[in-house]
Picture 1 (tube, rainbow, N blue to C red):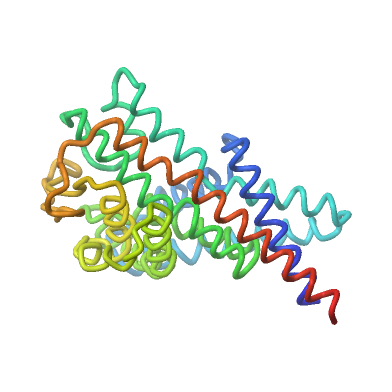
Picture 2: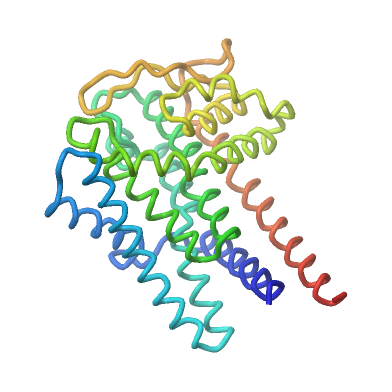
Length: 313
């Protein structure tokens, strides 16, 4: 039974990565993350209070409802033929990976007539007065950080806990993206969501940073850590620093959020240029092909090992 479960999850993960690679996002308003967002917005509209306890019940409500719906869906899928179950499960899992969408959205900054408007769709910082270089910098930082949140982490939890683990991770991440801000409204209400997201992303963020370093030939892959830990987030700074070191640019620095300046540290080599060009963006996006190939090869190798193990028992 354990071999069959491992075989199913590995096949599911392989198909999900392939579907995301080929087709990217779909389902639109029925996308699972959109539905999670409605759960969060509905609770906030009715029960918001600037208190940690109310934020705790938000998390309980969203994770409980998400798990209940997921388990109900799995019950239905398990009553289908194995091939149809696998195909539908792979489609669902692919919607919870966002590598193609992330890559294409950041790449669009280069060709956009209005990069400030384009980058505003990707980041929470104030973008109206950003220079073109700053827009490109924000795009690279977003790509690096969201390699973890949008790709490595959901895949990590899929492999560990199956589809329920992947869905619950995305619910945690969606909670953080909607209420996990250090603003007057969300400082207390979003505290539990933010801390839970920090915990869920602790290992995937560091794994993402290591992969970025190695895929760009940075064999001293641990060099990202001293700077990465200076970021206000316990996780975001690590893949951002890894990307800065990998493509030899300087990221970070003072950034304005919701009208207030935040003195973020700089990330990257001391002699790296601060002016970011479109070539730097393209170089960061080269990570996509290398990472997808590595993950696909790793999953196929794991599948082969499970199949060989099953044959020898």
